[in-house]
Length: 237
Image (cartoon, rainbow, N blue to C red; front, side, top):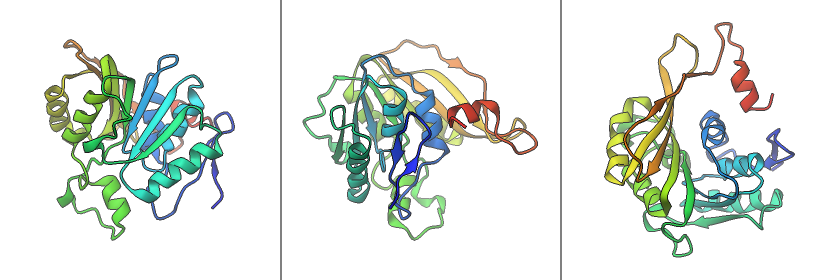
């Protein structure tokens, strides 16, 4: 396999055709997440490490830890860390986020990010590929599991950024509240300005107070079908 160029500071991403590949979700989340200088960051359910590598490309001072339950995907994370010479600040764990390894110390992270499975098992995703089903459907974990793990890892005041489905916001808010994560920023993603939102980007804070900023919608395409200037900037096109 030949790695794909990410177009950001020379970073690359090795991908497997049989696994979930880099998509809009990961690109938008890597841009949306706010990463302080020298932050310690965890990516929960990180697949092939796409968000991990994108954050490393965008933020050269952060320390990154990726958790992925599927063995082949976890192997790809390690390979992508090696390919991008990140072994001094990026680390991967083949582990279940419901039982995090002891080396991931609770309360020690500044930021947690996640592009979690956001489809219910009965949603009717039409694929026989077990790896893709697990990446997109709540088979190995639920949104409550993800929020619990994020809260466990975060320092008080740390942030949790994720991408999710707008039609499941009620479940997301419930899970966040159950684990002391207060929504602070939310941005809907629409394919075009007149389309219904297809994704939501959200940032929550551990132990935060009530009050959330509703950011302007992120529009993917102009009415003529071309990418908007903002999306081109995110992709560095």
